[in-house]
Length: 64
Image (cartoon, rainbow, N blue to C red; front, side, top):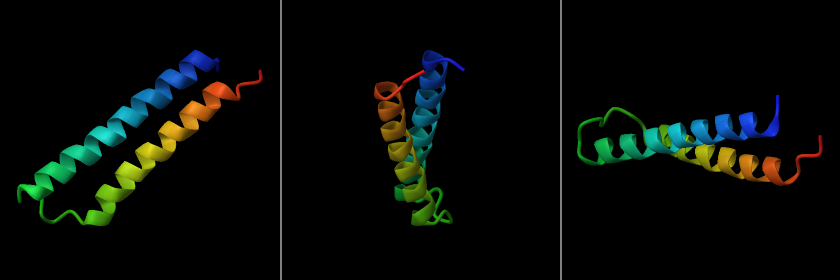
């Protein structure tokens, strides 16, 4: 697996997680998806943040 392929996949997953988290947060705030706990939304957002940080450091520290 080369570096550009891995970074592209990590960036795509990052966008999906952040996008889903924001969409759920907005829909929950509007009262449409009130049954989803706030912890699930925070897990999606923090997961996206962690993945973004991992992607950044993976790009910097790539040694192979």
